[in-house]
Figure 1 (cartoon, rainbow, N blue to C red):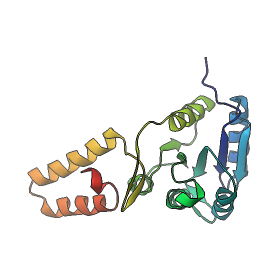
Figure 2: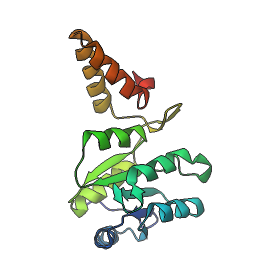
Figure 3: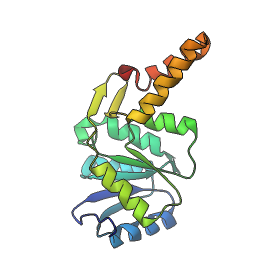
Figure 4: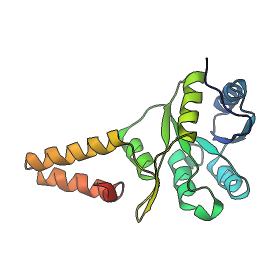
Length: 185
C-alpha cells in the first residue's frame, strides 16, 4: 500500500522550474493532495506566506531570485506570520557540506534529493508533517531540534579534534557551532 496524503493539507511548492512544479503537482494530486499552491520565486513565496496559511512548504534550493535557504530563513524568522513552526523541505540536485550546514542552521525539517519518486516525495512529506521533534528557539537558531545522528557526528568531530590536539580545528568546529547548534553541545 502506498502512503497517502490528505486533501485538506495545504502545501506551498516553490521552484523556478515550471517542469518540476508540474511534475510534483501531479505526484501530489495522485497521492490525494489537492491543496497545492505553486510559486516561481522567493519574493512571491514570501508574499503568499504573509497572506495565506500552509501546512508545509517544499522549496527548491536554487531559485531565480534567491535560494531555498533564504526562504527557510524568512519562514523561521517571521513568527508573527504564523510560519515559524511550519515544516520546510528543501529540494536539492546535490548536497554540499556548505548547503547542508546552512539548511540545518536555518532550521530545515528535511532534504529531498532530486530525482525522486512519488513514494519518496510522499514519505518525506508525511515524515515532516508528523515530526515530533521539539521546536526550539535560541538566540541563533529557530527550528526543529536537530536529529541525534547529526548531533552525534558533530560531537564526535569535536571529540576527535580535542584528542588529537588540533586546537585550530577545534576552534573552527566550535565557531561553526556557535551559528548552528551551540546550545546543544
